[in-house]
Image (cartoon, rainbow, N blue to C red; front, side):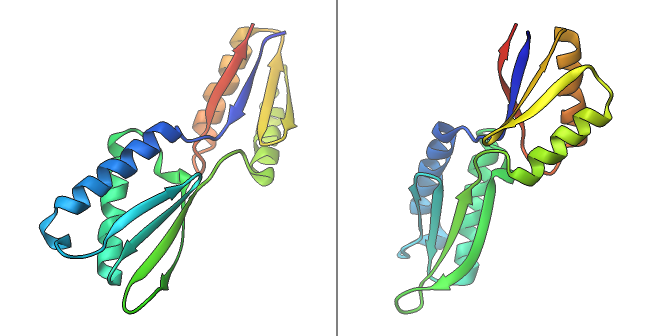
Length: 161
């Protein structure tokens, strides 16, 4: 029985490359000369460091540009509030979302059932498995989800015949 999984995962290799490129650009930019502005990555958490709010926002803009250039969807990033650290320095956390949240998974299953296509959708942890008897109906489901779900970056993998 043909099936596929609906997931929401960023390409972590591209994220790491974008962070490294952003750090290189920050190190060479004139407006960051002599400052301790940088981005650190630990698994699914990015930490942006700079001396004031304006520079933190500049670091964020550089990161966004590098992520966009590497085709990483910006909807994966979830920013925290800016925190003051030693002296006059600031840091800001950005977490990378992974997996389809429970609420979004329920909404995806509901949209698939409302479409009256002959497929079954079930929530499997942090993904949604869709199975049906025909490959064409599965492709219709993919097209439907691409059109309907715009608030979260979805990808479709594990397509089996």
